[in-house]
Every structure is written in structure tokens, then in C-alpha cells.
Length: 74
Image (tube, rainbow, N blue to C red):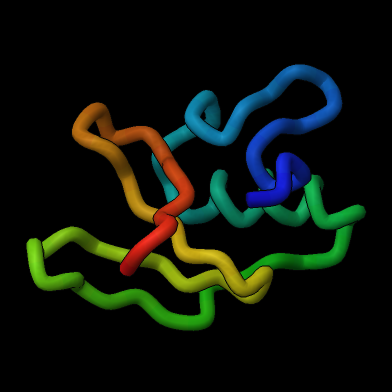
């Protein structure tokens, strides 16, 4: 997994951003050199967890604490 999508240069981590989809898109866009990252689709996995597929090709969900995380397997 690329660190570019996990940590911002100013010390901001993915799990530190607000738990809203807008906050996720803003964070990912900043990490993508200002190019807009948007939601392609969202769905529930077999465990009923909401998964967000983003235009950067990665999948994100929230952990038990409600913080964003990269999903390795969906």
C-alpha cells in the first residue's frame, strides 16, 4: 500500500481525518497532488460493513472506532 494515500506530508494520517465522506475525498485529493478523488461506488460486504470504492483505485471503510482505514480485502 502506498504511503501517499495514508499520510499527508504535514503529519495528518488517514485515521485522523473526520469520519465523513467529504473529509475522505478532500484528504485523498490533497494526497493526489490536488487531483480530485471521488467515490465510484459503495456497497455492503458480507459482514454488512459499508465499503467505499474511490477513483484512486482503493477501497476504504471505517473501523470499529468510526475512523477511516484502507481495506485490503473486500
